[in-house]
Image (cartoon, rainbow, N blue to C red; front, side, top):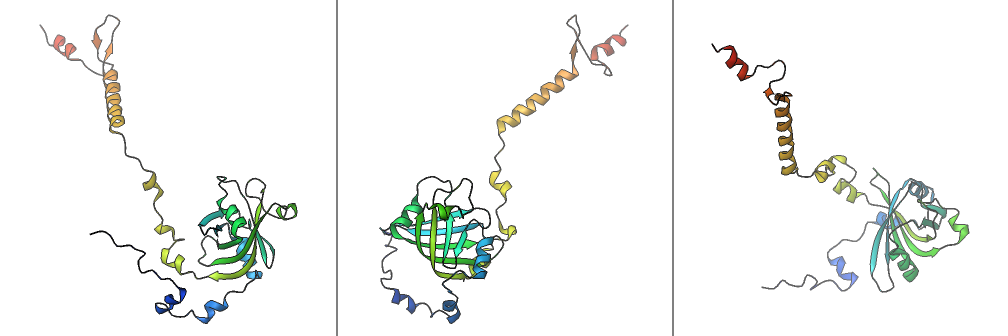
Amino acid sequence: MPDSDPLAGAFTHPDQLRDFYDAPMPQAIRKDIGRIDALCRRLIAAAPMLFLATHAESGDADVSPRGGPPGFVTVLDEQHLAIPDATGNRRLDTLENVVSSGRVALILLIPGRDTTLRVNGYAAVTAAPDVLWRLTPVGKPPKTAIVVKAEEVYAHCPKAFVRSKLWDSATWPNPRHSRARPRSRWRTSRTRISRSSRFRSASVTHSPTGSSRAPRGRVSRGSLARSSGP
């Protein structure tokens, strides 16, 4: 029996979702402040990592991580922030999407903190010197920057971090296990043979006349036979 289409019966209108979900709580709506206030500035200054979501004019979507020293994202004023470009694979997916659609969505992360900051809004790519000189370079001086005009700004629910235990080092994979390689049987056998050869060569020496003799401190079988003879 062929597998059924997993997209068959998918919702076609946003209103259908409310048949399955309750209305959002009032505080979830009120938390969007629409600007970068003093608390948001402190969160942005402490964040060394963000995820940047964009989409092309065609609708194709993309999410890209951006990282740097804490504070690499610069707050220009209470409505604008700037993200410096950094050396990458030169595909320019994110930059092309921003130029194409003019929209971005950001999630900024702080290590060890469950609360994240979301910033959504209009965006543009610029190479204006009066913008670039204000930025913190990530490696080389940036050639361009993404300037975001904030329309939605709010701290995001920490439940994903709590459930995933992302910052709990006890749940992280053991790097020793991921890097461990099976030991070669050939190398093991070669080591045993080498050790055995060294032992035999140390146990028997050869005299200038070509006869073998035991090293000092040992008694050879030949000497025992000669000492017990008539």
